[in-house]
Image (cartoon, rainbow, N blue to C red):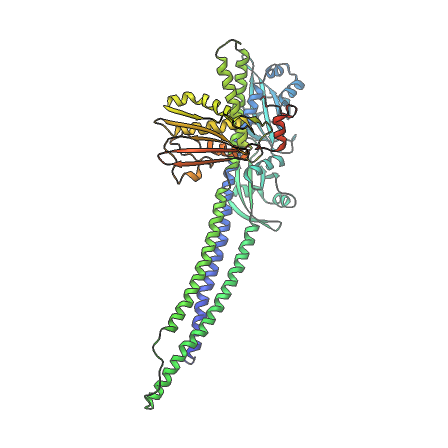
Length: 589
């Protein structure tokens, strides 16, 4: 090193510094990006596993409820006692959901109709949910819920409802989780949503050991990289069920490879730039040094007039500026990378809640229809002149509206049904306020009603609009616990019909205002709200191609504005609203 010139020493110093800084930074960034890909995929698998567990539990309740409904059906006990298996099969199969099977057994659990299954296993399901069982009579495992059928003083037999855990069941789970799935029964592949040959590759795995090991792992199937997680499914029968949830990571790894190539190019460019700066700096530093050396040599010979470089900070300033630019470039690249990662996380958070909301709405329909059946039975048994029939009719009507609401929650992403008609929103407003009047009086809320006498009619769903306005009025009253004024106005133009609902309540904070239309977000204290009202209302208005706007001032009140186009729906629906022959049949459930 002592024989090297100053320029060479500076050159090697910059080269070593560039390699020591850039190469570890590239390795660290590449490893961080790849780790982030697997962390995100692992978190998604955890969430889909939770969704699968919820779906499995809800399906258990659905099967048990279906078995109970059929066990309590009229004439089932008599058919069991008579042993009329043909009529019993027809009775139990009536209105049976697609993919479901029914079975019946006598009081000793001997099969009468349907798939014959082990009675000892089925006993575990009686009145307590479902079990998973299998037999030589069926190819796939069968999930069955059993309910006893009583006569006056004894058990006449048992009725069961089941579903096969086959490819169709796997596809239904795929719709819930959004991840490819493989169902494993007693260590054997029962069904999967993968096509061949990936399904064959899964079948060749030691599935028993995979299920026993559990956890989240990575594996390559037919050249495709996947992460998969193992989830045990409660079965309580003679078949042990597990689910493998798969998460493909090929696209993310391709992105990682692209980032690695970009980082490599950046690293090479940074090293070349560092070498260029090393040559420039070595030249700038060597010239003054050579001039000083020459001056020192001349001084040794007694020459004192040799010029020397003037003191200047230009070189140091250039060096500092070069490294400052490098740091700025690296900071800018890191900032872009972090912004991209933050955007990915934000999009994941916005991916919704839809499946959970849709499943919840689906399950609420079952008790609603049961209550409707009870009310219809009371209606048939009541006296025509009974003054309480008005309340019974009102209860049936409100329950029907609840059923419509749950169906709309279930179909948030689908167009509204074909029951639209020409509608006067003033009539809807009056009806909503009539129903809300007791609550207004209880909360000491005054009503300021300003309805446009010549309000144009709109093509819309009456129940849906009733639900929207009832929800907004209810929220307005809740916002005025100490009393206040509820203002309701309607206005119309040639294209737009508007309903404005205002209160003089507490208002909504600025930081909460952007989130009030999110599902399950509520500003009501305690357990008074579940956060679905405005979510559903906004979806209904949007389904009519309208807008639901909100303005609020904390401490002064809130105003909701419903704006609907006069012809809000498609041409076939508008024709159905005006042509009696095209008007769709109403749902009589």
